[in-house]
Image (cartoon, rainbow, N blue to C red):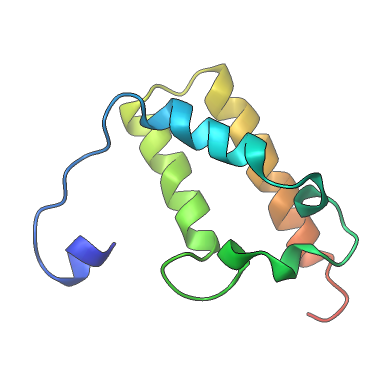
Length: 92
């Protein structure tokens, strides 16, 4: 995203990107996926370069460059659970 803003060509993710992204999502605390008021404290749930848009962009890259197999489908479900937890936040 930063490369696009700076009008430079960004390198596409390497083949192992999908495995790394799956590992990242699996490593998120289980409280991240639950509707119990803790998801908004996560660093990636804030505005900016590390925000939730990063998760969506990574899903897109995983589908394009790492194959949209079972890992991708499971990651879609994980991100869906995260988005449901965000939308269930009482302070929103």
